[in-house]
Amino acid sequence: MFRAIVSRDMRKLANLGRDFLKAENTTAAALCLNYYFLKFPNIKTMTIQELAGTLELFRAYIQILFDFAFRTDLTESLPAARLFGFHRLSTDQFFIPTGTFLHEYLERTRQQQHGNSLPGSDLARVFQDAMHDCLWRCVSEENNWCRKAPQMSPCMTFAVLEYCNRAGCPHEHVPSPAMSPEWYNVRVRVHLQQVLIIQTLHSINHMRNAVERRYAIQFSQISQTQHLPSQRHWINRFYEALNPPFYYLGSHLHLNPALIPEFQKGIQVIRGWVRELAYTLDFKSPQHFLTDLIRGAFLGFTFDRHEASMYWHRAQYLSFPGPILRFLRLPGNHFMLPELINSLEGRVEWSIDACILSVRSVILRAPHIYI
Image 1: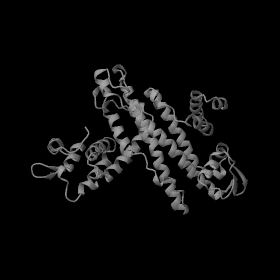
Image 2: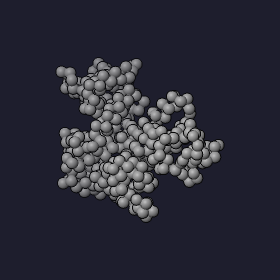
Image 3: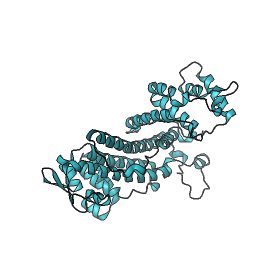
Image 4: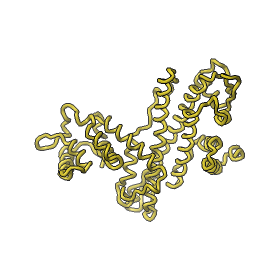
């Protein structure tokens, strides 16, 4: 392991990380993966299968760090002390050596009123603050890579015509023989992996808020100007992976959860995100409103049918005072969004009629929508 670290053998570090994870040696795995992800790998040249393997490793890595920060008693954890380089001086005092992760964070944030030592009561707070900052930077970098990853969005021109004249095309050119049901499921998998990675940041914020309320302490405000990576962006990307715009790329009928190890956990997060989307949708973003509504409702009724039936029909936008003109159906100026939700749910006898009326209204009123 140490030879691989010194020689910067990234392939060896990744393989060692996998082996240590299988052996449940999380401390050694975290050390290997820390050096592997010190600079996020160039995923643009990877196959979709290699990308799935890299995201699997990255998710395991940030989960280990999350567990150390929020699910471990640092004052009693020998593995955490070895990994992060601090050690006990007395019953309630810990030494933070120069050059370690924690010491660099204390220097950067000017929190060195205790010198190179910290009382046990401050160790967890400082460590959680430092880990929040670290995970935020790591996941933000990884998220930027994944948003631009060509494997996430195959080239439609190449998929249809089998050639593309666009210089430096940012999308993946996948030959038609490779577009198998297995390939489709790997594409769905990498999107669910990314959903779970983004959810880690939301979990960190939730845990920090809970600790603040429980112990009446205040974490540093480094993240006040930061924004969580967009849930709506990845809801839309997951929808597009599930329902590609061209039949060569597959359809949700090809979905096979048995081929996606993260399926259940990922869908559980998607359910929560879609519920939040339903309750926060408003008319302030006319270019995205109808697209977000249709895609969110489809995912809700597909993966959370019973609960979705309640929250989509109780959403705030349905009780908006004075419906906006573009959502009034002609003739008669009837509010068309309840009909649209019923057509997507498909439970009532007149669902098909509602669908026809909704499509007609969209054509006549021409609201912004991405099909």
